Image: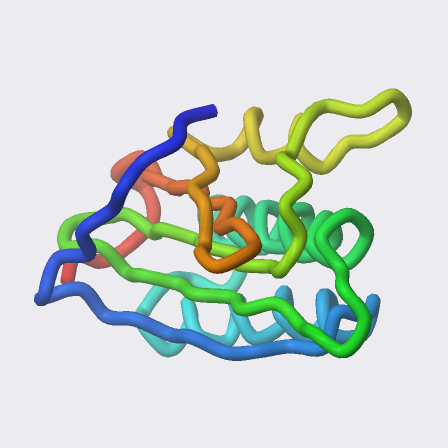
Length: 143
């Protein structure tokens, strides 16, 4: 896990949506991720698409469980990076940093599927947890 300041390339395609901090919001984030990736030309049943959906499911579920504040939702951002790659960001109002927890699989899933991941503060309160999926050559179109 890293903490960083990120600059998104101007040529990158981006999708951003706010969701309610509920299980329904987390599920909708995962479903919309797949639809957005398909719209960008990723194969619906491709390994990288499935990996991205699982990472989004883990991060949004953690945002709902551990980063939730009453009346505040979370934001999902997908950035289709130039070349084959995807940056996933989930921003929530909680300040609790992600960590492996007994019985929890969320961060373990992210570590297993992402090529890199980390967290950065989101002032005035909150954090953004990010992960990058860089598929092998079998998957995704270049921008």
